[in-house]
Image (cartoon, rainbow over all chains, first blue to last red; front, side):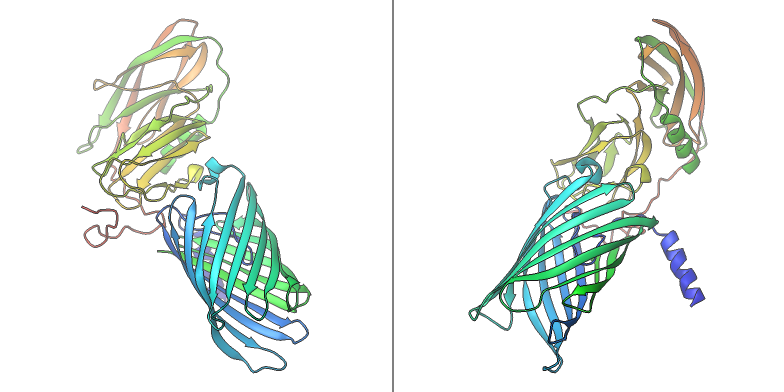
Length: 243
Length: 223
């Protein structure tokens, strides 16, 4: 254990020039974009444990490849899968969605040229694999403010599941603050929720600590969201590798 | 190299406002080059006061897998443009902590521009072509000159006062300096001696990795 910790410290302190660093939060999107013509593999793994009255446990996987079309626009192609179990249903793994998304940062991609405020807009359209007549739409408006070591961000997100048997609309607010601790390791706190405004399903909100790191081609963020209502906890890991 | 950069950075960040500006400093830089050290540009500049940056960007061309010029001078608050003159992609970046940047990859006849708000000495590289390297010196004012082939320089428009004159080149062991006192309309003559040493400017790519051999992987080349 001691050797592992020492090795990790060497890795962190001896980190090469940080390059990637797409978000400092695990649940919320950041405002950075990939450098022009860059390509990145991105993955999310997240859990929603003891969700709602049915105590649903979910583990979801999101795999995507992102292309920087211009200095301001990114195109993402993604596929998603989910493990789901509740009080009344056996656990089951299935592919849930695939689709594309566009992300747009109107400011310069360069943090010095852009100044402390930055924004990003995200619009995603997904095909529901098990409900061929339906689709999912996702949108986020993200704003960040950077001052010295500190980055604060808010993410106003929304999700619409459109199905023949009924639609579901959720607001997905997120916010966080992250402080650079050593080298390119950041510590912070973030909150995130999924609030159902139309259709069935439980609403929930979590808050928890966040750690993020950039190292060469790699960036990653992890959080352990503790339920404030509607859920016990919602941990999440998000990471990416530039190709 | 790092020591030279630190010395330069410490001395660049000490500005004050100029008063009346019609003094001149001129002189010669005597360069001592070790065996096999190629001749390169020698920059002479004056620090101790600040001026606003020109509104037009400094231009750094990329031609035949070279930055032209490879010793670039700008003023704090100004911009530097990097037009691509080659028929393949370039990806200009800097890992220097004073001004980390990465403009991404872009094709011929396009340009990318970045702002440089603070004085400093900044390494500039291409992430696709390891042989490309340049040094960007961001000064607090516009009072600099490149020495001619005989090492002579002439910097006009200086305010009265006591300032520090530096000579620096990409292969300088360290920058050298002399104090000069400028009177209203006066001319000061100085001689600076600069030692240059061999440097290969080897560096890592923007991810902090060694470049892959270009014969195996060179995605920017479409020739």
